[in-house]
Image 1: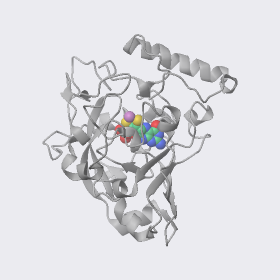
Image 2: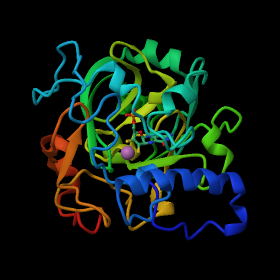
Image 3: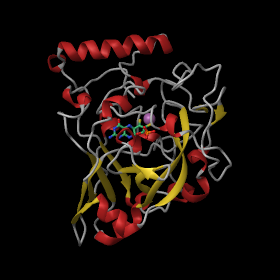
Image 4: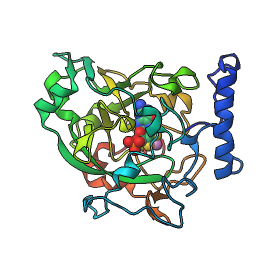
Length: 322
Ligand SMILES: Nc1nc2c(c(=O)[nH]1)N[C@H]1C(S)=C(S)[C@@H](COP(=O)(O)O)O[C@H]1N2
Ligand SMILES: [Mo]
């Protein structure tokens, strides 16, 4: 999800290797979208050119083990979910993440929960799993690039962890921070992006029952490429809000900075609610390509979760608060 330009990055910081990597991504991207100034993959609207495993005329067989979401849409295969990933700490190449992340250690894993809380604490994922008994939640994931999947997560509501640490009355937002380990995450060695990856939610969004901390996938553990040790899943928002490899959860008073909104505030807002009527400045959000399907389907308001979340935005202008 790159930007038309990087206003905050002085040219002197860009080493020849970075230029090479960016150029490679640029060459790839122009094959998908002539005229795009995007440097890397996350800013390119999905153009059916990069099916995970097969040509687009030959849809990937959906081997979802009969699992469906509440709309009846079949879950994507484990193969697709674990081989078509956005994870810029490793690479901007979705189909290379699995290989580059294969040796990334996801256990043991600790998450520090702190800030405006009465009971700050560092938890291991093992403790969280014992305490909160994760359940299966089959959610649609809609990337801002206009592709989507249906993923059977294993996780527990973030709400349960937040209740345990007791946010104070001053807490209004939750800030999430991902791991910073440049020795193991090759994408962090160059500074095109302001690492560590950060995200944020309003406290009421974080307390919604849909908001999950995921510790697994398809009944098993969470593969490194999908954000293991532990990751956030916010199914009514564009995928970039669902931050992977979370190590810090901080309760704060002010709206926190996020990686994408600090790079390109006009393209990736803080709210990032899925909305077919609010286009990205460089492409339409009216439809999407479900990985494994031919053709496109209509994008649903709040990704189909309006009943559970529309009330959070009552009275807000969704065009202003994109
Ligand atoms: N730490 C981190 N989290 C991240 C990203 C990332 O680059 N780094 N990419 C986001 C984007 S753009 C998407 S679409 C989803 C993809 O999740 P998946 O690979 O499990 O499908 O992860 C999100 N979380
Ligand atoms: Mo995304």
